[in-house]
Image (cartoon, rainbow, N blue to C red; front, side):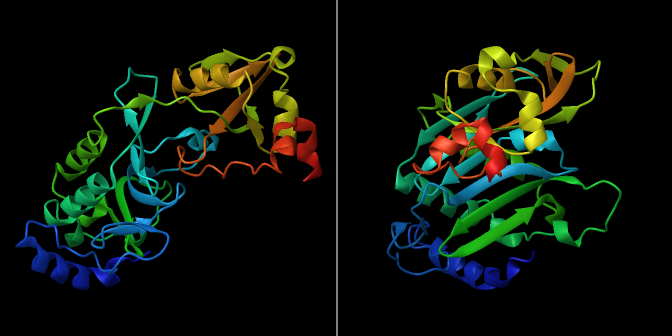
Length: 284
C-alpha cells in the first residue's frame, strides 16, 4: 500500500503554516464537512468506529491469539483514546479516556510539524517475502479524508516510535481502567503446552461449552456475569495461555469493538438476542 501520493502537497502546506505556530496548518482536506469534527485545519470523521490515530507493533505470523491483541494507543473519531498502560510481565492494562477535540487536533499537528511524519512513507509492502512475516512498528493517521501510514522500514530516527507512543499515552490526565460491557468470544482447539498458562473453564458454571463454540467456529456476544471472569483471565495471563475444559484444551479469543484491532462491530438491538445464544450460532 502506498500512501505517499498526497505527501508533497501536505508537506508544502505544513511548511507554509509553521510560521504561525502551527495553528493554521491544513492537512490537505480543507474546511470541515458535515459529519466531521475539528476546527477546519484538522478534520476527522466524528464516529466511534473511525480511527484517527493509531500506533502499534504489527506483522508477524497471525494466529488465533492475535484476536486478543490491543493496539498500543488509538484515538477514535469520537475523541475516545484507548491505550495499553504499564503492567507487570504477563498481564495487560487497558486504559481509556475522552479528549478535547483541540487536544486531538494539536496532537496531529505536532506529529507532522515537530515529529516530521510527512518525511516517511510505508515501506512494509516493499520488503522481500520470507518464511516468516516481519514484526514492525507502524503509525497511522486518518484526517481530512486522507489515510497516512508509515512504518519502521522508512528508516525512522531511533527514538521516534517511543517518543510518539509516550506522547499518545500521556494525552489524557485522567485515565480510566477499561472494563468491557460486552465483547465477542470465540474458541478453537489447542494442544497441551507444558509452558503455557492453563486456565480452567467450567462449562456448566459458565453456561458456555467451549467444545460447542469451537465446533461452530463462530463468535458469541458475551455481556453477562461470565464477562468479568473472562476479561480478568485474558488480561492477567501471558499470551501463551490455554483454557482447559475437562480433558480438552482450547485457545480462547475475546474481542471488544473499538478496543481490539480487528473486533467485529457490536450487535444491533435486533441482532443481540441471537448473538447471545450459542444454540443460534449454527443457524447463521
